[in-house]
Length: 142
Image (cartoon, rainbow, N blue to C red):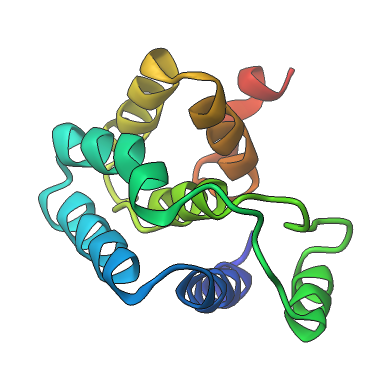
């Protein structure tokens, strides 16, 4: 996925999340994203990723028709309808990670896969189209 599309999807997901959670949960989520990005720390990422449902809730995402259409324009055939807010928030959190150090980036995400429970795995597999280094995730898709 090109940078322009990634940026547009990231901004759209941010807007949708902000509308679907309370202000405290949104601030917490943004703080966790900053911590995971700034420190590039597995511990901070794992804590944030695991705690998301307790902060955001698990309700189905409410999305406006214009937002759904924009997603469909950017990524034909892709939809987040029937996603839960915690799933979307987890995917969004992964989109915030630093990607410059390929080994560190892949290691952080693989670590989540190794420790994930079912709902976390759903989010991780849902994030695959948005992760950098797509060749690294081929076996996960097989």
